[in-house]
Image (cartoon, rainbow, N blue to C red; front, side):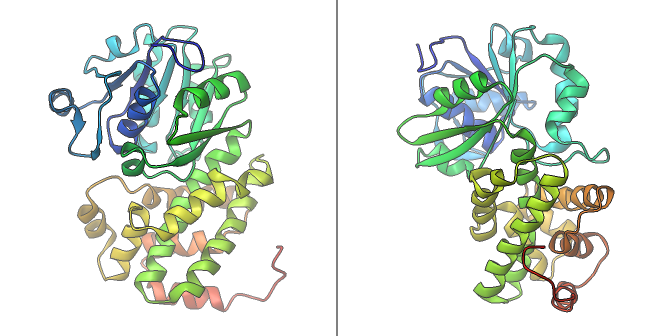
Amino acid sequence: MRTASGTDRPVAVLGAGSWGTALAIQFARSGRPTRLWGRDRAQLERMARERCNERYLPSGAFPEALQVQPDLQRALAGARDLLIAVPSHAFRSLLELIAPLLAPQTQLAWATKGFELPTGLLPHQVAGEILGPGRSVAVLSGPTFAPEVGAGLPTAMTIASADEAFATSLAQDLSAENFRAYTSTDIVGVEVGGAVKNVLAVGAGLSDGLGFGANTRVALITRGLAEMMRLGVALGAQRETFMGLAGLGDLVLTCTDDQSRNRRFGLALAAGRTPTEALAAIGQVVEGYPAARAVHEVAARHRVEMPLSESVYRVLYEGVPPREAVRELMRRPIKPETE
């Protein structure tokens, strides 16, 4: 098979959860030979038999070009492009595992979102520490729910890389009638957007669960976007990135739709569950929970004011009642909206 970018070399997707599976399906749907690997060999064997990830993505049937590969070395062998789709807490350990296996020409992308705890590093900084300079890398982000991508519903996202040719190649290989990928050079902005929106989505779930209404939700999204921009610019991002798919787009999606685990987590907290109980009920990784601590620490380190994100942190980690956190926000001093 030959794709729009002119290559029939396979792409390896590492991470067989809902998002990794959805992206593997999309690569294969577009005609790219694709290998999907994960740590749970028994789960992979079931997926290979059923040609579907019944556990995490039952809506997505596997195209012919998608091969489930339980052997990591075989998954990587001959792959020109590698995509990592694991939670932020597993990103470093997976990079350390694959580093000795990568060919010099292998290009690396990830769909991992969030600052690393306890270092406060963004994924591209973690990758730089482990893999060193000189390798083409990219980050994929944007308003995308895995079940909708798996089902082939129309979707758009952003691919950011300092190597514009690599970003364009990935965008071509992912794009099809149901999927459009845009490119960017602002890796920092795309990664900050993906990290902060998860925290704000927890806040949106809390707000809606407490019955605060549409006015509050929209205010949270709008002022949350301002916080996201402040932190991103302090870390070297381009302000305009946050008005795009990986900023405003992803923020609106995760704050307003109950497919978002982070929003559902906030709803469960508002219903009186503890964080531990809410996480157990959801049954999958909720990135907003560790992200709240990470954003709190990074913002403090860079002296960036983020009152909404800080309120979510205090509810999750300091036991502040959600209604009291809202009262504190409403009592803050009046200031210009642009600040």
